[in-house]
Length: 192
Image (cartoon, rainbow, N blue to C red; front, side, top):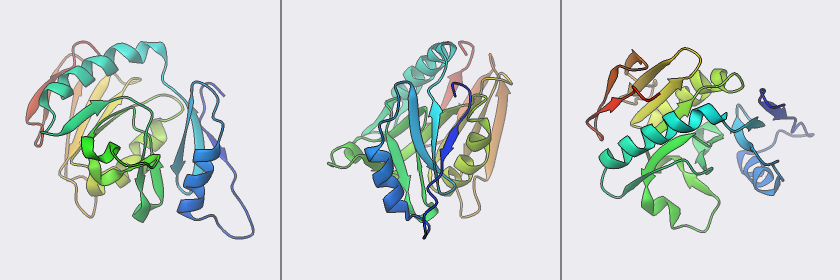
């Protein structure tokens, strides 16, 4: 289980609602080192990243903190962001979001608060990171960075639309990557 995402079958007499799935995730006793997300109408439990992901995650977070829009924070804390219209709830590896989203009493932040998400691919999450999550983020989140740890490259998706992201730029680790507004900066990926 350390390398594979594991869906939890929630098959009942009637399909579960998005809200009932969120409640189930809240009540789960997820083992240390694992996280639960709602992907394609199922609760998926997957492991946190390997140790070698710490350095690139911290390097990216530091750079984004300095360029974050006013009132937004860069974090790696294990929070779920809900996308009710898509029936999804994701816990991005790294995110930049409006700090006001964390003043509520709930356990799941609104996906509309995100200005950027960063997903570091692994063997267990790469398919969801490149398909399901990208499709949902592409409707709402201004910038999505997919850091392909197996392929040693980083892709910046931007310009969300009703049909998904309209812009995509990929560079190999070590090359600079332009991140458009609301950041308007260049990421140094040499430490990845």
